[in-house]
Image (cartoon, rainbow, N blue to C red; front, side, top):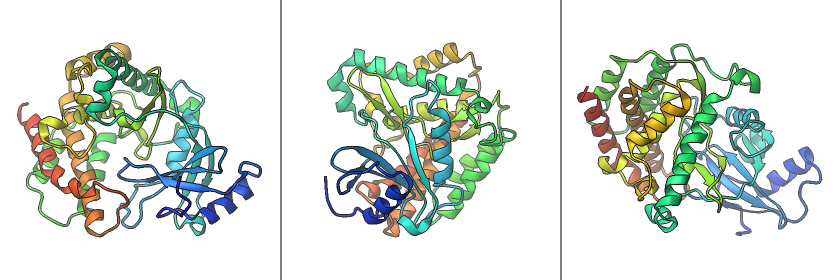
Length: 340
């Protein structure tokens, strides 16, 4: 593990803060590395030679309004830890920007693999791929079954008008990241705004639920759900639709994100929907609207990443591909809504 400070992480400042807030936690000198794969908040594995922990902080540079809220992410993980939803144990939240230059939090390191590629899943075989996918769906059902009030998250969001507010939020974030013309993206937004469905009972929603945002152990069990930065209280079908949209991205010619769902054994769209509906008991008859919204949301996220990349504010590799993925996502979202 590298000894030098990775971008955005001052190991001396981190060490001082941990020794002050969690005395006795650390023994040897700290080393750290950036965990590759994330495209938004920065994630590091930190070690003292004996134990390992994870540090999360906002990205360098451009930060969109309401995004990258470390306190919210820390709060939802802390609230869910006693439930059946697998999340890491949280250790420390620091909102003093003098320490690392931005708020951050520390949580336990959970072993497991975030499966991202078709080749990784093919190496497991179709049966194990199906098992992991089914557990991914079942974990989402478990999350949506949590009573927010019982875990201290009753005021974690405002469920009333959630979908309308989500549309406004993502339109605002799109406007904050505009640096070029994106054909069809405003048309997609307008179509969504004209036909917003009525939400069912609100739940905790993850906001970016997909296979490579969970860790899987060697027995194909999900050991942790990660990347809670977009979580809130709202319509659970937004999570299901986003999971489906990620699995359909190949038809949109988008290869910037993971391809694991293309492996043999991964359930079809209809199979995913049927398993979720059966186990959750929710009405999924309006799901196409949610999938169209998911493609709009993904397009806005990629456009924001592209905006940061053009400003030289990204850490890691692969960001140059983000801009190319926006137009296919928009086209696919418009196609889905056009069929209705």
